[in-house]
Length: 245
Image (cartoon, rainbow, N blue to C red; front, side):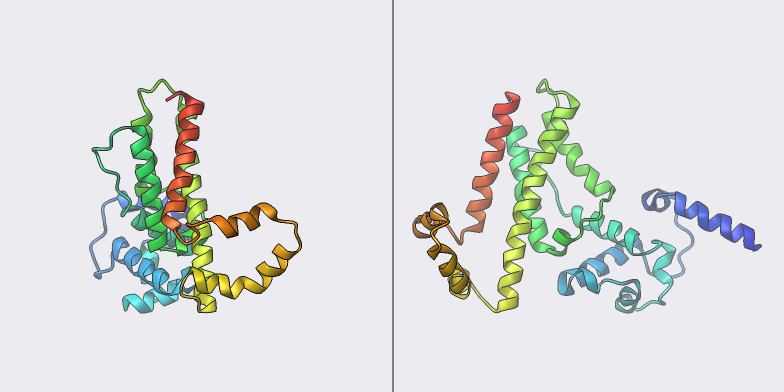
């Protein structure tokens, strides 16, 4: 093939999205490698060792293929992350029998938390992507909000607010779990004991009376599920009051 034709083909590939390419009829198979197999292996590697462990060369080794084999489907790490995100979001399903918008939103937030706790590298992977399985999530929630008399901007604001709360809350939870793992602390008691010198000094300054009261009176310091759901209910109450739904 002439050099110019090769260059044109390469440039055209870069202008077509990953998902559009994958929708096209597949070429005659030359191996058992598929986009799903690539995504599954990459996600398994990221779950076990973190997102930094996922490289095209390491992935080829895990798959038992030539280093360049995966490039038949993805152009590099950025598209690989798209493939991984889509694979993971395929696990996030919403039931058809939710009672209404609030039940749907609550279920969405709880399942986002479960999803990211299962794949903690997702909290670090802040790459903006548009994938079929990701878009299926707001599609379902927006559908539940339809018919409530809200305009399109308001509906999307509600969805994004709940999603942002869920991701932000679980990100903080994962950060604490990561610290505990690094320090070898197994539970909340060991964590508080390990942080006691810094906390004791800070509280003794007298600058944080409200936080000191929290430390003395709170009974759910280690109940991450309750904390998440209580905060979520505050968000949903706010949406309901603000939007009159």
